[in-house]
Length: 211
Length: 141
Image 1 (cartoon, chains in turn red, orange):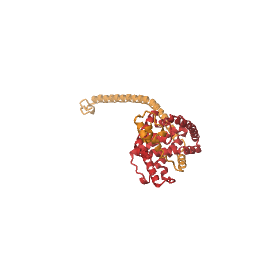
Image 2 (cartoon, chains in turn purple, blue; image 1 turned 90 degrees about the vertical axis):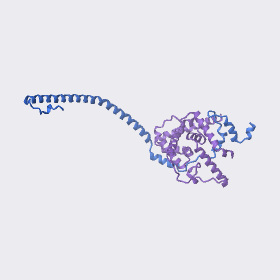
Image 3 (cartoon, one colour; image 1 turned 45 degrees about the vertical axis):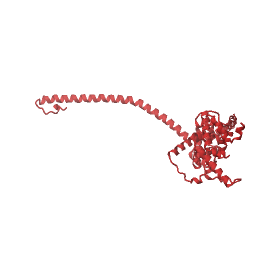
Image 4 (cartoon, one colour; image 1 turned 120 degrees about the horizontal axis):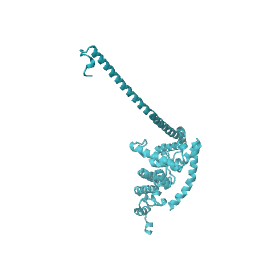
């Protein structure tokens, strides 16, 4: 029940935001670059963050996130506001990410940087400085280790479950929106989320008991 | 419930999860320890120049090229397909009648050739009836 109330409130806020996005798309179709800039600045965090969580590779995530906006820009002329803009845009994200998974499953990729320096999950391609305020080095190391474990657990999920959990947890999408993006029904989406949580609960059991 | 209160959140969740199936309503997100744990690994943010680079890439890609191409391909495919169908409809009966006429002409040519051969044969037999070296009497023909 509480979930549904939250979904309803989020839906009302999303409606206003969606109308603004559609307006930006109309302006973009007329060649307004300022509208494109606004759209990128508004959604870059969600798009980049989701792709980064899905791939676990900040560099590849930057490239794919840029491709998403290029596709949005090029489709501005033919865009018809039949669905929510964000749902439509994240369908592009889904297609690109799943294609990338298929490409990766065919080829063995060797990272150019050493795994020790890999900053998975914290993003920004290793630009982020450690937050040393009010934390001892030991605490910081533990926090980093836990973040890596969480990201690894998310990456180990099947791709549909992974996208469902990332969209729900980090982007706060409603079940209907996730169902629209994954092209499934709402009960199927709930089932995906349930199974993803079950797997994560099992994988991250040690960290939950440490809380 | 009092017993449950003394347990760790994960242990409480374990006991609840045992009796659940995937079609049930999910637990409240806020009360789910998994949900709380995931918050400890926040979503990565792009760097400060991401928007500028993306804007430049979009500018290079050009507006509406993708949709224009699809429309153009669709129109050309439809137009081309109709043209090919029309050409087939117009050309097939014509070629059939043409080949029919050619066959009739060929038959006439053959008949004419036989007639010439027959006339040559009769003239030969009139001129030298005892000759047996005529090529027209060759049994292989």
